[in-house]
Length: 200
Length: 200
Image (cartoon, rainbow over all chains, first blue to last red; front, side, top):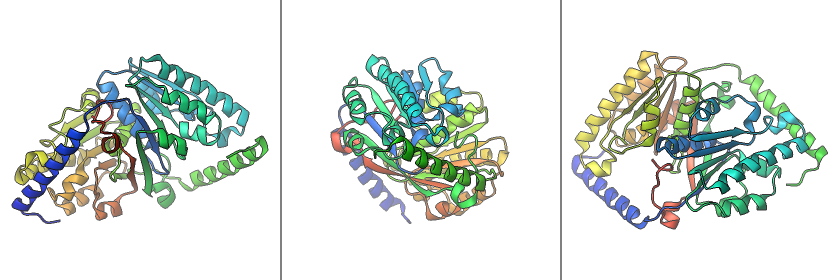
């Protein structure tokens, strides 16, 4: 795309006008229900990127990791050490490691009890429910119960739900939904393994 | 999806086998060129989520923000305060605010000089080049020069490039590419404005 100075100026002016119009139309704040789904990378990391923003503003953050409890994660080391962050991990690792549906359901329930407490407390500005989509896909928790708690959340609370296979009813209820789409992945194509700093 | 205990067990066993097979095939580590693009939310936040992992492991992180220099961001407050993170912001805000192509190009060059220094130093485990795609789309920097530096990076350095409109040649060179696809956005649909903790 070649642009000379004049046509660049026209283009950026049009963009500025468009941007200002959009901003003027967007005039209120509310707690958002945010869903990161899809088969690509970035669902959990995008949640933690927002977490960084929340913490940077000095706001209180809650995190419940539903599936990754058995895995050591540096995000837990890092965020969990911050005073205005409550970071809870549940789960005995991925379901294909535990091979026990009843145990998975009990663990999901314990995680959900923590999540519900955080949501209903009114103390948090953002609550991240990492891999809740996966829990819902396997029906480890009743979808209706989860949706009811999310609907009744405090007006200014942002809730971020991550994981593949977000249920349709959750997408319907959500304010902001992003699908992380895999374009290229080095596991598959180059035999590169999961690496510290990138995957965990 | 209803599953009784037995079929659940079969399914999770198959998954476990598939997962183990994939892991066995993926046997080496390398510094990845990671690109987050698309029109959805999560490109920058997913980069900062990986940044949290890198910092949680005690590894050194570099960040150059190419476009957002004029905006106050809490990620800069938060990550920039960490000892093993070098966080540099360049740019006078979005191009539709500056209306000056020559100034944008000079700013992009300053940012790139910092980025290049970080990449070539061998001191970092990850370097995040936030909104570099946007800089390349507007041809504020020569694409070939950028690609040459990325190709010659240290073997274990991860570089993360974010922004809409990633150039084809960058996608071609990259190891891991994710498209953040907008499914639903509250600006557009509900007139909700950009909010602290979510957008900045």
